Figure 1 (cartoon, rainbow, N blue to C red):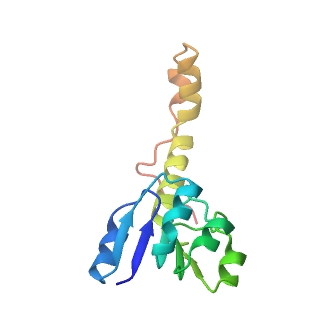
Figure 2: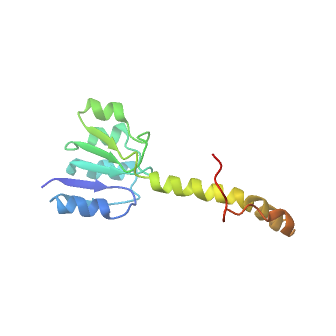
Figure 3: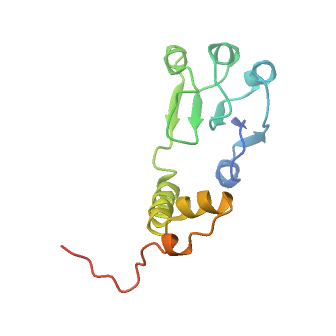
Length: 145
């Protein structure tokens, strides 16, 4: 049965999907490079986020590793050229954070409209700039085309 190492904290959704497909999963977070090198030979796959750096040394020690999955957009924490040299597939999930990114952008827009950065700064200085922190309300606004 294939075996996967999940080395960074993430939701258990990935683990459940692997297990549903008869893939053994070990979740071991916070490991050093040396600790990963000791255990990686027993794994067929590895899933990381940004905390784990998949170095040349880890890849060299990975005798059975076929796939390195990055739960996130970038793969800058994985030695992709060396993994490819070792015939390993490296994949990522670039759209995985699209909702969070959109929500964050909307939160920042609302923050500026309501003058929250200014209100925060002046309040921490002991001022209460009530008239200057009214901001703009969105209620009943018409969209101009």
